[in-house]
Image (cartoon, rainbow, N blue to C red; front, side, top):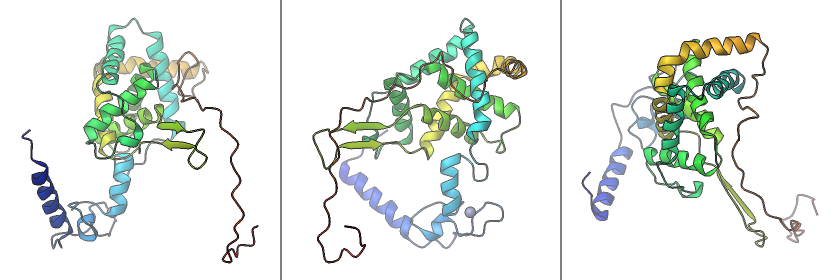
Length: 280
Ligand SMILES: [Zn+2]
């Protein structure tokens, strides 16, 4: 890609912003069935000629304009069965390749704190999301299980939106929850003792994360999906636990230890004449 000077990229951004704000006579109504809202291009500075604000938001959170994300109670039995299958078949070359591929995703980027993600492109954010999992020492097999579980749900016809984007976002939502945000503590700073920042689980970054995981488990899904579904059915018939997605044999994420904090100072009583709340 040709590099632009800073001034040139600013000029270009200004031009785009002006164009986005300009009235757009072609902007009509949202393309989702039974929605009669104006598209975003008509109501805000945007080039979105397809969706209204509400449906655009829904799409960026769930990967579909209509289908909600899988509830935990639906996804967990699949995630658990996939994880147990992986743990029981570590010798299988297809399984070990999938784990290794997720491992290489983990090593793609340097760690970036969740507070410094602003302005990064979705693909870079996705790489950093995997780096965050690496730093939290999340077990790679949990990520493999997430990718396989979504393929299983699709095979069981639980996927109400057939698009790949929906499947990818569903994988990413699970993977996103495996990691955590950035947590910082300043025990000596009474005014600002701690900071917790979680990257948002929405937008194109989810598609990129999901695509990467789907790619890593593609061969495993292509060759072993019927086996894994049979394995799940057998586990269920045997009454094995499946409400939790994690196994006791697997390490969850490592948490940032919270240092010893001094007791919080009480808020001083307001002496203001405007304190009409009655609280003293
Ligand atoms: Zn709409």
